[in-house]
Image (cartoon, rainbow, N blue to C red; front, side):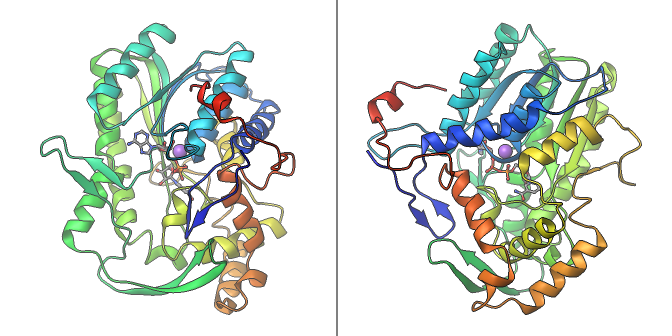
Length: 398
Ligand code: NAD
Ligand code: NA
């Protein structure tokens, strides 16, 4: 079978396994060259949301960088079936595992709903059997639109909306190669509450409580969750909108987890990341024009980073310098994005951007390329005319 990209709006309905393999290999190569002078690197790591974006990059950085960590990765992905080829994250899991095994590293993939108690039990068992009973680091990198409410069996659903005002703007459509005008009405109280349930800190705390009660956290264990704040230009849609309120909740949760971990001298961290093209971020209406402008300016200045560059800089740069935190104690790997000179140029580009000129004003080809690569397409090293053997794919398991 020949696999083609199938794009609907901002969602890819197909993925290319060989391209996913190329993506994992490229990231591994970028972590192998890292150096660290710290002798306190985490050796046993649990990653929640390990199959794509920042979670996958964290796993690769920690396994193939100087930490040489054994890892357990939890994700929600699907394999090949009558319905289709499966999801990119499914293949990322498979090819990460193959590479880790070759390297002599422990790598366990657990595919299931991270919100469920069954998955918590599976993780507990895996930490005991595969990691010797405890972890040194828990990376919390879930991004999702729904979370089951265990009391009702129904779902909380996030809504990406402004709060208190209607926002007019543009959103990129990768299917039509267009910049579409959008108008986002303010969130209702219920939409605000449910977004905080889905993307706030409650589940992070609950995971840490579970692992702590089971004595699965090593002395000095750390945890990190990822956040976004962004510049003034995106505040109406992000920082002051529903997602931002959920992130503020996440930031406060750090204090609760720090209290929880006091007895084992553990620590909770928030890393504020840069805006990047991921499966989750292209869903945020109004953010994509900003990404087009940001990519252009940061590339021009030689400061562009993808997920793997961000995670390498986090774990082998910022992490061990306790002084390298902002006044709220957050780790800022959005520091380059928010530089005044960058934002000045970004704002100038955004002021000029229209549905007619966005492909030239912004880095549309670069953003589209990264979007395609998330799903295994657009890798120069992959021969996309090559036949993909579906039965061979069915035999692969994460
Ligand atoms: P992503 O979509 O690439 O990754 C999400 C991961 O969560 C995947 O591994 C997916 O399988 C997993 N997942 C989703 N629902 C799950 C479930 N129910 N059970 C188990 N696994 C599940 O997203 P991302 O952009 O890497 O986001 C990760 C974190 O980084 C989020 O907190 C996000 O807000 C934050 N962040 C993203 C950006 C950005 O620009 N992309 C910037 C700053 C912070
Ligand atoms: Na992730």
